[in-house]
Picture 1 (cartoon, rainbow, N blue to C red):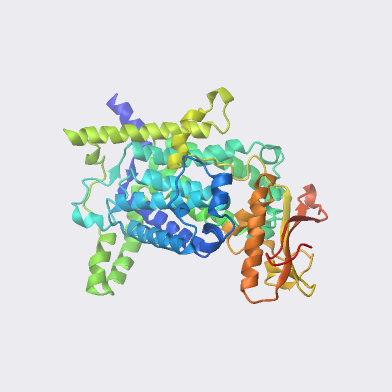
Picture 2 (picture 1 turned 45 degrees about the vertical axis):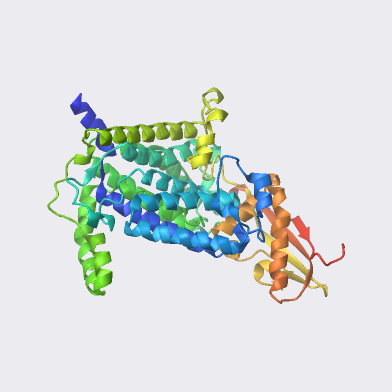
Length: 510
């Protein structure tokens, strides 16, 4: 029995150095996310923007959720919370009071995501779950400021319920998104990527190069489906674990790098690439240390003594440590043993809950998670749905025209900085979006069930334009030029749809 247990636990033994690398990568992505979001403090998080607090609470608020960002409609209050989130992310990167700042970063991430769910995508769910499981992981044990205060670990290998949860969470992301891709375009016809690259709102230059080759797109479509469906199984092979993990990380890095140059998905590809770093085996970490540690040490030596005192622990490691099962896994007597057992039981219970939640996406209705049990998922935001381009790819494509009519009767396109309005299709539709948050908002703006949000966007644009000192407008029309994606490279005639119209408060009705 001990031998069988030893074999079964191998897939869940992780290197502490890889977990530290995961921590630094998650903190880096958090800082990028905060930086991008901070450019739209007023637009996305204040009462003067596209989703005022009364509308949030009336239309999309879940009573089990919480949001510190929803405590004020002032952009200045949002700036303070963003500053706190950035400070926590820096502390997480450095590994300073790691568990505490992990919790702070997680709370603030939940808070800002709950403040405006209309701009979220799948990467936000994954980032949230990485922080959630990270709270239970020892990802500040090495390569951190915390490590200066503690002796070096007896081993660099570690396994627990939290490492099992982390590994299984990564597998669930890809298994679920593959199972949810149930349309013929994904499973039989192989045309899903053709339709994805037909969406000008997300098409990047790399995608333009692939688009003219239907047979290649068919192979890539089926390859994507089976990669997502089958690759996670290698994480649970208990033999030659290091090899299978390198295969998993290498293939997914290549997969997400290819997505980053073909489709505009915001930070999703970076979050996904960061998420797998905790799987790197000891061989890979030893190579990274030999390859990069001397350069990091040389850079540190060039800094002042005070900075050197803080930065040196980040690159400190002990080559004499044996790679074996961590001593921390051994049960300790008294309260520590009870605390550890309680923590392991809590994590296993949460993991079972997460698995059940994911099973809910495609299981029989009588197996579904009961509504009375969903409050926990909403409260701590372990609710998740990995329906990226699933069950099929959108066929409704197009671009926005923000038709502003001046007091003199001229028509200007606010989406092109006030240039004369034209119905010609832009050379690069994706360039009309300032960032992926706006792209996702514009996608949600189209849905009929979100029609309540349309006047707020229209009035926000009109107010910002009027305050800029440019030609006064007497009317603004938000127009969508709908262009349905057709099979076999056929081009549909765009149709004009006026989604919303608004006027300045002082204008008389037209």
